[in-house]
Image (tube, rainbow, N blue to C red):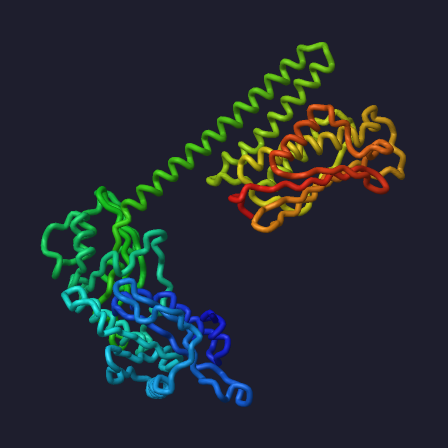
Length: 506
């Protein structure tokens, strides 16, 4: 099924005309809801005389169904060509620039509306009404249909979509079903739907709604000392196509104004309004929870760093070199986990930008290694964002492997002896590639050093040490695999692949 962009690419319309149609389709759900009818947008397309001479020069480019009533089209119709009779009416409306309502065919009524921009008809909109399944006519239905006809007239005059950048109201943007108010040119309420009346009642207005001044209703109920945004009066009087939000002690109300015009002159306005108090309450709760979670991560990080510092202090009081080294290793591992919690404490997500963590691990691990030589580090590629548990596991693995590369790959430099010129400067490079295997996110990682390499005939390091046991246990928990190989002409490469939890982000 072609998209609107695909169809418009086959026309000779200017970029400004194309943008106009995109804006119309972006805002026409409101028109469909007010008219209780399906809307279709028909575009004249360019045809190749030889190859496409048997095709219609018209194509159905977009379709909207109402949320306020039964649908006319139940199947996807985008991309369909018109029938001969429909093509005749499309051509007539395109050439005349006037709306047309052909005689009803059975229980079907169609209204053809020219889509006009700057005096030129660039497309045709059709309103499809199923007369057999129409809603019973009442006050709401009559007023909605009157407002929709005003909007259709504005489309035919080139006055809709509104030729201005509307300011948004974020989450909770009102729709037709939330509440409709029609204002006169003076800003008085001419009609309010039941949902709109209910919202104004919750705002505190108990008097008659029709004939009341909406701006006065709202502004007199704002808390004393409230700073009013400059958009509020223009929205409340319907003078600008903007949106705003009002907050009182009892309600959060979002409003969106659509000025109604005739012949370029404003004759009133349509306002959509919605009570978003519950949405805002949940947002405040969510922000509170996120702040609490960040504070927890911050405290965990502080506690881990405190324990690591205590271990370092304790190690200085010991005489046994092996005991001192064991405590130092434990402190280093705690500091690695603290890095992950430090990153989590700075954001709102339970996901970690692991590239930042990996860079800090490389720098910190090299700084605390016992070799006296300076080892350069580099991160290539990207890990992406990982869930906290994945990030903790991967941070531990990476820290152990980098520490092992520095400690053992360059141990000949420990005594500070001169290094022959042909030996390259010590360097550790971590390469990461994020990808997918089926539906599973995976990360392929290589830790490369240019040190002395593995002992002759060895397939890997001594696995009896605690560090390697930690690495293999965490790799197993991540459903991964790991392998060592000698790098030519100098060094070692450790390659491992891990599977990430499905909710990890890219």
